[in-house]
Picture 1 (cartoon, helix red, strand yellow):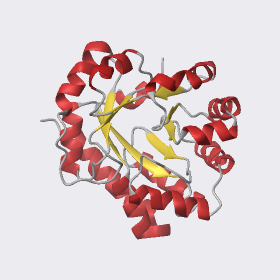
Picture 2 (cartoon, rainbow, N blue to C red):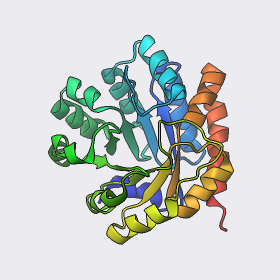
Picture 3 (cartoon, rainbow, N blue to C red):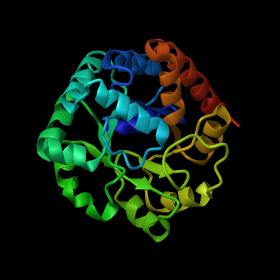
Picture 4 (cartoon, rainbow, N blue to C red):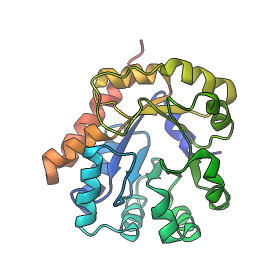
Length: 259
């Protein structure tokens, strides 16, 4: 059974996304610890990449700052080793296929197993090409997490049937970033998913307020927030852990309220 399912056992899951190394890796480590302490159920760690095509300007900026600070995949692996000394919360990497390819896919995924990473999200990997990584993910016990976009339509069933870990439902077209409102008919997407799998699904892209998180969690099993957290980190710098912790606590409370 996937360790990721643990994240969804205590009701609706709150999933923060954090770019590793922005502003520096020791601050990232403190941010993860504060997020866990304040109720985060699963942590998405972004491995910085020079051309993050799915990201809007906020997360692109975080990637640029992290790379300028000398963050490498090996240093991110070391960060996870340090976190895993005392944190058992499920964690997944979000990065790009090129990062895995250039590191060497087998070495990358075997290291994921060794350091205790539970899954990987590759937003630029088309579903039809996932066989490039799937066998190695299986070999090393790393869930390859699929994304379902509003444009997936007839592919939703196909993606849902083969889903692992959890399904990442993309709330809106375009790149990541906070949005004032989310207008996609997510309820019907979730309905189709439910016909084909009982794997949890969480909604991400564009969520920033407790109200948005709550409404997304009502439709699905959890809410994923990235850009709003990265903005806080950019704003507070080395003091970001406390600010992110308080934000995570508010968001977790919002999605935990019974309607």
